[in-house]
Image (cartoon, rainbow, N blue to C red; front, side, top):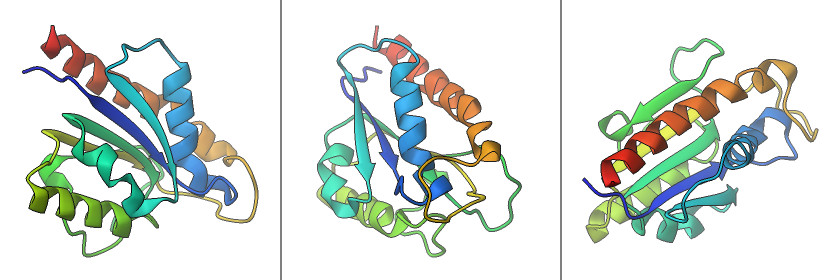
Length: 159
């Protein structure tokens, strides 16, 4: 299966410590290697529904974000496709209302990516502060590696 467009989106407010995890993970992933032009990196910040075009205009999307599962340990979580319901009833992150709305609208438009992945960690510190806590910073390499494995697999399928 060919993946002509892969979008990687980082969500989060970098002014609130670990809430900026998604943007930090995006930057770390982008800077970790060179990627073909079919892989685009989008700093989504707190834009929400304004990111709809980036969801609808790709074959696969990875979203990095700080998230809070129902029961959790402080580790990297990866949710794929059906594990991410179009309308999330319990918000796992402060941006999921925007993410769930975008997925719902993309589905209604018939323009859902074949692959949708959310990679995130539960935040430890959400105080007004630029930068991640030490504990969350230590999880960045694993989150980046999870994304790299996915993108490498999608690109390999496209050859």
